[in-house]
Length: 128
Image (cartoon, rainbow, N blue to C red; front, side, top):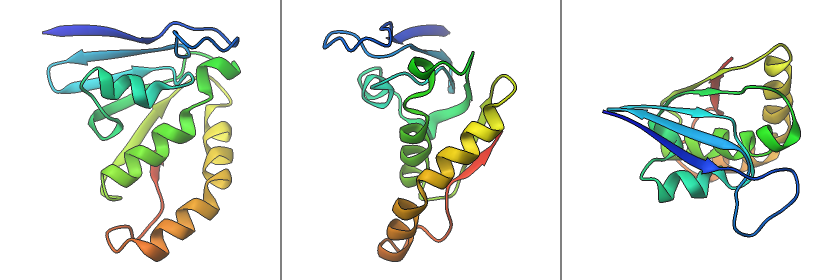
């Protein structure tokens, strides 16, 4: 069964009733997230999914409203999978550099979590 969930239909302008652009595609146990707009993890939870369930993330383009919560997807995927899963990310040219910069921005948080949570022994694993 294929299910497409519009997890966010907003724009760069904040709107309390609309999360940023993102779409969750569920085909059986395979979940793919298209774009990572503002509030996507909360909307995924409401749709019965969470980042560890993701087979992949597809970024359509690098506009801010489509990528603001990539770091939340990375962090939540890492923490909830207890560091035992690799997040696959696909996107246009520049995506690998963007993800590297997100991981760099998360270094202090990653260090703290590794120091204080026995299950986490290495940082997030992301394959772009």
